[in-house]
Image 1 (tube, rainbow, N blue to C red):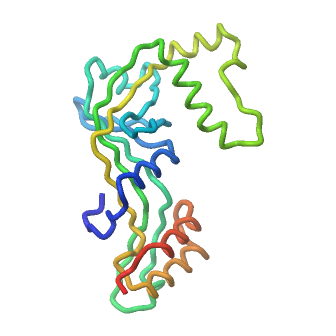
Image 2 (image 1 turned 90 degrees about the horizontal axis):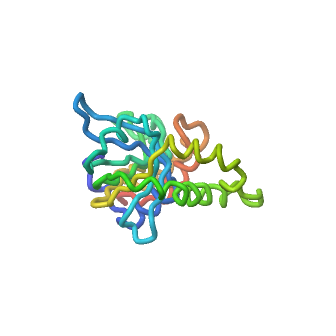
Image 3 (image 1 turned 90 degrees about the vertical axis):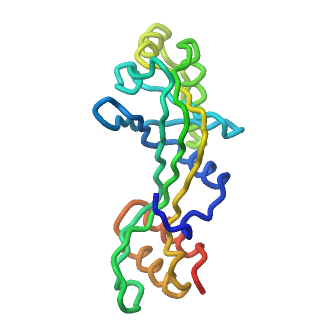
Length: 208
């Protein structure tokens, strides 16, 4: 995470809300040969105490979970390259604006009989966002096929013990300078979700 405190002013709740809405991130644990990572969808419960996910049984992280492990999930949002020319002031350097939230805690396996409920809750979270489409549910599956597929995945949960977020949106620049950069990001930014990033840059507080 970027060390400048100006980029860490969002509340823990705002960071949790962002991660909960994004619901997808990179899970990392320490392995014998170095970091082990997996890209996973997840759910965060209402209390923000637990994060729920599933892993393919053959995933190295799942195999390592004979005992609980310290883990971190990195959740990324909009990001984009910022050209120094966009500021229209001298002696600037290139940078990259982005939003990222890190959730750290203890990851553990859960009993296998929890997998159906977890799948139902995960699919509902995403299917509800496709309204007015009729939601897909596990009830649409042939029971024998569903049972076979569920045996290939394992339910997990992580106790959320710390939350950190970087919202790097040119808050270190005067408002007028930041707005010019946002306009250029909106028009022809390079990155992911650059128009959303531009809107967030416009809403961030500067140094004026």
